[in-house]
Amino acid sequence: MSRSLNKVALIGNLGADPEVRSTTSGTRVATLSLATSRQWTSAAGERQEKTEWHRVVLWNNRGSGLADVAEKYMKKGDKLYVEGRIEYRTWEDRDGKTRYTTEIVAREVIMLSPRAGGVDVGESTRAPAAGATESYDDFPEALDEEDDDLPF
Image 1 (cartoon, helix red, strand yellow):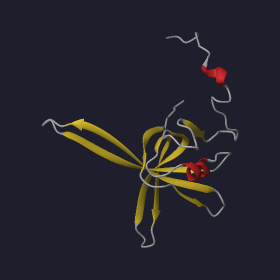
Image 2 (image 1 turned 120 degrees about the horizontal axis):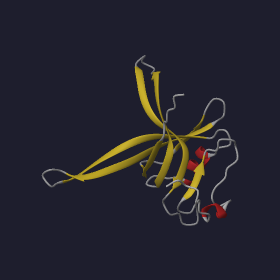
Image 3 (image 1 turned 60 degrees about the horizontal axis):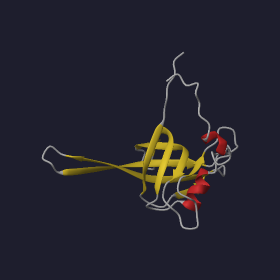
Image 4 (image 1 turned 180 degrees about the horizontal axis):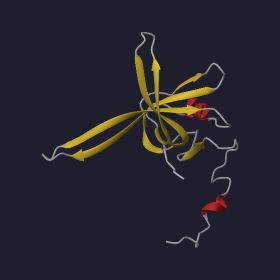
């Protein structure tokens, strides 16, 4: 049996407030522009930096409220951890030209920026597989146990 994996994890800052809209079927979707940067020193000793921009899509589906969370709590400049899958799409624009886009379809988002009177640092929102949302806050004992059966 052949297996594959499509998983992306990013930590970056929002370049703009989330754009939230509804599809024709009424499903809400949010689009984020997330910036990640890397820094290095060139051979000449100069400090270099490159910023990459990622299009991240958050859906309200199968019990997930990711788009609603984005609309309510996220704003330009916020630091986020995003985990999901990479997806490539093509479409034809109004002029008949083929357009391409690369998106990260989020499965989990953790807000890393502190909030005054709002969501705490490290608050996590996950797209559940079966409709119910759970977190380690619901099961604090899960963090206390050690698993001695690990083979390493």
